[in-house]
Length: 234
Ligand SMILES: [Zn+2]
Picture: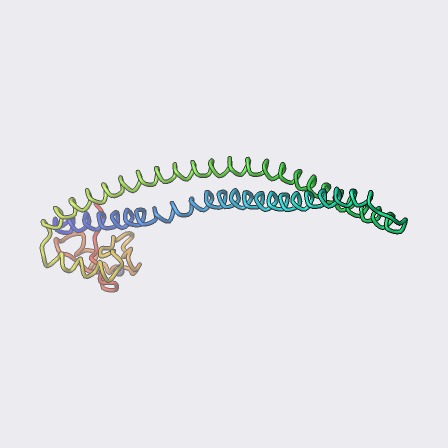
């Protein structure tokens, strides 16, 4: 193979490799973000349960306040019982006392139900807290791994860039220009290998005449269809 063509084949391999490395590199922030979702939703669940608990506790405090008021009310009403003068008044106050007691019972029952809910909520929170911290650890591990991956990708990219700079210096400037134009036009694939006598860039069959030129001469031949520079791997 023509020495210059050999250099171009190497350049093409290097450029495609760099393209893959860049893609991997650019995907890393996305991969980190995707993994963060699990941690974030576990943390959200934990926070939601915590605020639900706070709501229940607030309701309990309100009911306890009302219960205290009713207890005071009951005491005062019971005192009034000693001061009544008529039977009618007496029975009216007894009726009031009964209804206060009924309201107190309802409040107490309500508080007991809510206290059970507090216990259940606390158990749930413990589990969610555990899960959230587990997911956080997983995410932090992912971040660490991905950051290491990124670092080694960047090193490899840099190494390839240096290699490319060296390589490019050896290529004839006119040929390099042709390569770069084709590379831009064909999504980084400026060269096409000829396999089974067909161009692997556009799959057209290469005429026997061109094939002969390609294999027996030092000429650099372009595909008559896609214009890519043709080569045969040795
Ligand atoms: Zn072609």
